[in-house]
Length: 319
Image 1: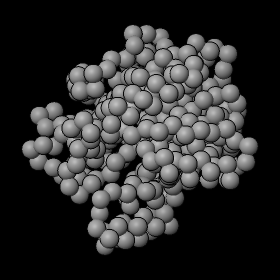
Image 2 (image 1 turned 180 degrees about the vertical axis):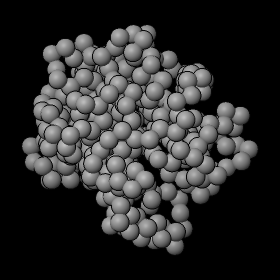
Image 3 (image 1 turned 120 degrees about the horizontal axis):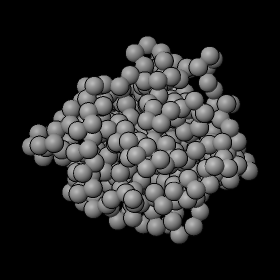
Image 4 (image 1 turned 45 degrees about the vertical axis):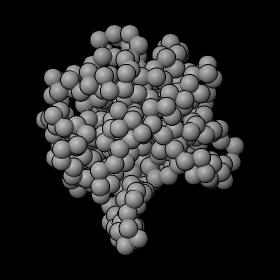
């Protein structure tokens, strides 16, 4: 890239439909806002109706005339994922961009999804695996139109620099034997990258025009630092820490830039992984290829994780 890519470089997305998980706040919200301003029809996939409706109202206030709607989605519930996907598919419209953005970050004690999975792995990994599989027909519908479009349909999965310190513990994926908040988060982000690259291999094997791409925001001030079951003192400390990050490193708006690049840039590559180019990839206004840890390109581990994900979600991607 000869110059810094900016949000203004996003091409026209008129008539394009985009679903973003966790779009009611932080990076997800700013991603939704900037894509909506380029003409995209945004599906805000949010767990909480009240917060989702507030985000929808904020979108229309920030940029009147945009197209957006709320889809209720709790990635920690198999039933909710199936219901949300059914709602989207019932519209009989193509889905041009699926942005797997939502995440649970390091709850201090081990928690489970409604289906009995460790909360971070169940939400960040299995939830997005299931959603992507269920929405694949709508992505394929967009792929059938892609020859007439400058923007190929894409699945963008948000990873993290935290993946560099992670390993996949296939013997205890759900931390039932030993739980560490950060270790479980790091594992989920490594799994997100393994999913991205394995999906890319499968798409390339079938010559699909659909892209699988990943991005990370560096370290940004998002509600990940504040949401969760914490004591009042810890919530206050996390809020202050988040504000410091916003000042010293990235705001949530700045943190959205790698996601926007992965989702729309003509230079983004199949199976690419993008992030900020500042100090240790933690900050910066320039987006470029991110550093991938060796364990994230372990083809055997990715194939095994894919099989486990199929077994635990009860879903397979359409052939």
